Structure formats: structure tokens, C-alpha cells
Image (cartoon, one colour):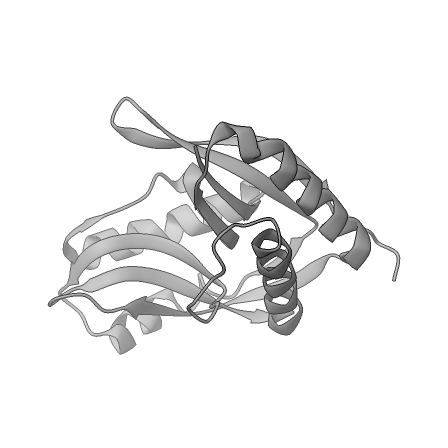
Length: 188
């Protein structure tokens, strides 16, 4: 099974991201756009694991979230950015401002603890972001796109939980099934 830990958005954030995607679709020659309900902030991509490891993964996550006493985090959308591909914006994403250091700390702690039970440790630097499209060819420059999105990118969100998801193929599409949600503590 394919697993990841992510923050799943509330309804108002989902609508805002859908609005951003709609503006970008009008400026794109082509691209693949994830279903807006599947958009999230990945905290840790675990990848393919055998079903038998799920209880140990859940136990490790339980212990990690309890030990860290994770607090809610506040973020604001930043500019549109991308990871490059061959002639295209391989992955278009919205950057974040706010409690970034704390989110990176959480990612690193989860990564470290899952490596302790034999899962692969992350080799790339963790860049918190919201993926909104793939393999996109835009008619406009990144600067022009950010200007068009300026008002829509004025948005704040609060992260109060993380969810362990299972990603499955269904009807030719990816479907994310929540397995367990970890609610953050308001206590410091």
C-alpha cells in the first residue's frame, strides 16, 4: 500500500485552491490538475509498504505526535512556484509562509522515527508546499501568473491535525483514504 501523512484542507481552503486552479487553467496550454479534493500539504511521504507494517507505522506516529505534543500551526499562502521539468513546470505549487520551521521540525521528527523502524529516510530537503498542477505549459510568465493570483493568494489557514492516508487507484484516478487522524494539542 502507498502511504503518506498530510494536512487535509477544510472546505473554505478547498474552494480557495479550486479558484486558484481555475485561474491557472485559463493560462495553461496544457497540464494535469489534481482533483481539488485531493490537494493537501504533505508532511511526510512514506511510499509503498507491505500491509503488515501498518500497525508499527501507526504506533510510531502515535508515539511521535504524543511525544512532540504538536501544536496547531498558522500559515499564509505565498507565491506560485514550480519544480522544473523538460520545457514545462513539472510541478506547480503554492508556497507557504508562517510556522514553516515548526512544520519542518515535525517532518524531520516523523522521518527520523519512521527510519527507526526500517522505513526509507528522506534524502531531499523538505519544502512545505501545496501541489496544484503537474506537467503544465503556461502561456504567461511566472511573474504574470503571480500578479493574476495576488488577491487569491491573500489567504490564511490553520493546521490542527495530520492524517495518515492510503493512496489507491480507483477508476483510473488516485483516491486518498484516511486511515488515522492525529489532532494537535492546544496546550504548550
